[in-house]
Image (cartoon, rainbow, N blue to C red; front, side, top):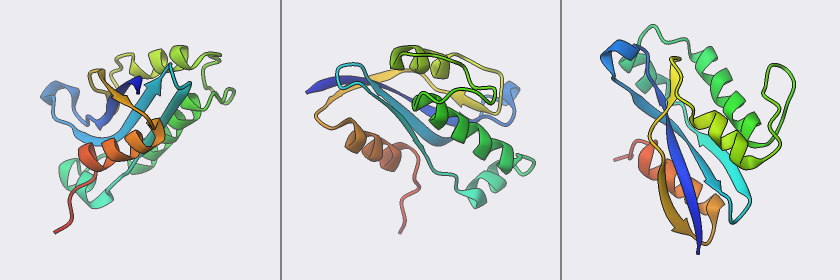
Length: 128
């Protein structure tokens, strides 16, 4: 078993109201040398929650988080060599529409499968 940390990525259209909608998860396991993000944007749900939310901007921000996880740089992305540094950058509080929630932890044998499980549990709306 390997330790991991994760944060849920949230849409926070109005910071002053402290209301949010979960749209993604970032999972980091130092032991497994794993850092990745997954997200799912249910446009109907977001539009009903925040009618004025700019979905293209949300998608761009979520893609940016994935790019940072993968160590991409340039095009305004930070240059951070180590996965732990990149995770630290991602979890830093921001006053933007996409914000990370609190850091949580766990144990897993398969970080990629755990990321999928967390997306299912914390982001996806169960279908009847």
